[in-house]
Each structure stands twice: as structure tokens, then as C-alpha cells.
Image 1 (cartoon, rainbow, N blue to C red):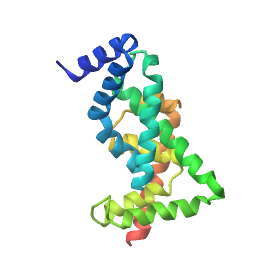
Image 2: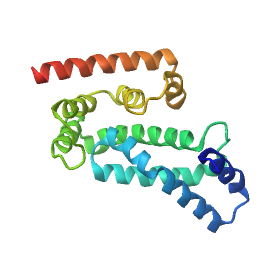
Image 3: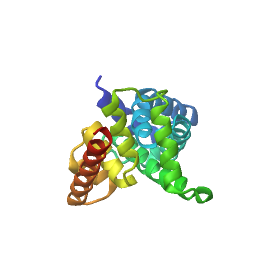
Length: 187
């Protein structure tokens, strides 16, 4: 049985399931998608502890809304959309929390990149991650979804509830900023 068929069966039966069965469904979804979501969220927030906290919030939101899943998309697409939206909200809250300045949080994220614990790679890869952290959240999300996750502009627009033209513009600006950052920091 394909992954898509399994997901469809899980969702179709979810509203009729007992609480114990629903917990089992969530556990299966977490087994199937947790690692992929970790990578997606981690690229945006960088700090391991923040990623773990955020994933707990994401899975809670999935649990609370699973019976509302319409089935118009694949379950991973729906969970991915929740993850991106929760991550963007987290980044906004993080900037406002205790009046922390954006630059301080960005510095904290950049230090995490260079600690080498969680992101490995050559100098250009490190510079790419550093440049991404300096992007506004929306541009960072669009760049990540297009560059790393290889999503189509149309799908990104649907996930972020933006126009396709707006997504393309955000991606273009992000690419230019990243290129400029890498050129100036490596020279």
C-alpha cells in the first residue's frame, strides 16, 4: 500500500476513532513525518532547542485539527503548511519576546550555525545559512521552500497564502540578498 493510500485511510477513519486510536494515528504520523519536519523547521530557526519546542507546538496543532483535515491535499502538505505557519509565528514572537532586538536573535542563530553542532558543511554552505538568517522571515521561508524543499511557486503561494507573483518576488529578493552577502563575505 502506498504512503498516500495509507494517509488517506488514516484520515478517513480518524473522526470515527476512539481516543486511543486517535493517539495511535498521531503516533504513526509523527513516525512518518517528524524527521522531515525537523529539517524544515531547523533551517528556519537554527537553534536545536527552539526547533524541538516548536515541533511540540506543531504536533499539538496537528492533533487539535486533524479531524478538520479536508483531504484536498496530501496529509504531509497539510502538516507542512502548519509547520511553516507555526514557525513564522514563532519567529515573530521570538523577536517581540522581552523586547529582544532582531539583531540579537539573529546573532544567536548565527552563532549556532558556526558552533558546528547542528549544521555542517564547507564555508559557502555556512555563509548560505548565515545569509538566510539575515533575511526577513517571509523571504527566508520562501527561499527555503523553493531552494531546499524544491516546492513549486504555486505550492508555496498556497501554503503562505500569498500570490504567486508575490512569492516569486520574495524569492528573487532573497536570492539577490544571499548572493550579495556571500560575494562580500568570501572576498
